[in-house]
View (cartoon, rainbow, N blue to C red):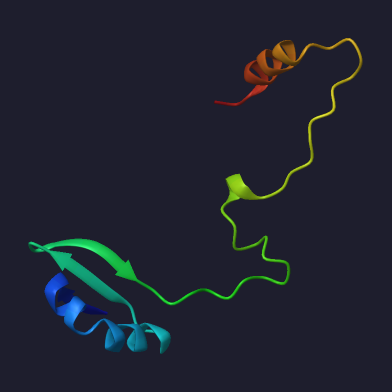
Length: 83
């Protein structure tokens, strides 16, 4: 990992991007504190879904039986949860 101050990154941005392109990580510091990490792009899965965070992945909607209220289903699930 290459660590450099922001002023040096500004002066050598193109060279730093070349390092990242080759698989290196570059950490940019401002006033002695890390503010950003430049990391290589991770290859996506076959359909791109595997690389998404879990909260962005598609999901199947919940189907409730007829006559069951959503609010009651949520309360029932809370009661059944092990935590």
